[in-house]
Figure (cartoon, rainbow, N blue to C red):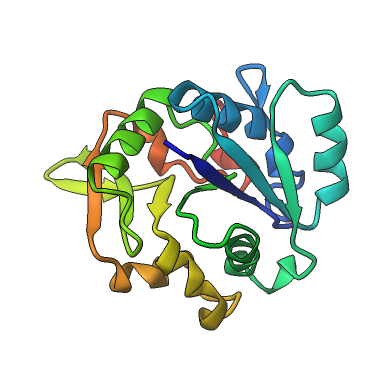
Length: 198
């Protein structure tokens, strides 16, 4: 599989009070945890951090890290997350991608492997959308990261940078899911009180 992962890490992290990409979990910074999970699924994965407010700090952290990660800086990061993804769609034309918010850094490698296997089985559809899901009571709850087909990604430019990524779901063909045993797909670390052990 030709795995391109776009990790959205451009926000100012004002509620968290510090750069979320550099938060540590079990001895790994958030971007390192994500990179490690991706390498477990596909050793040759191309991992791209979409940076913004903390671009300089993230690049400095990469110098001393074993993680093989590229940075793509979005100078207009304040206008919205989708702007950075539209920038990536232009930088990697015709590519589908696994979109991974930095707010959700602890997803298990087995979940990434399940997502990659399912995406491949679907034929890597140009308009596809594939999300992980966990069973919560009698219903499914969907989380991150998500596979998005190349054609859907190309539509982000027209949607505008402030439109959420989920706006593309209505256009997805197919709109698919893979059920996993990993509640970490639902994590969304946006403030200190949401962190493990807080």
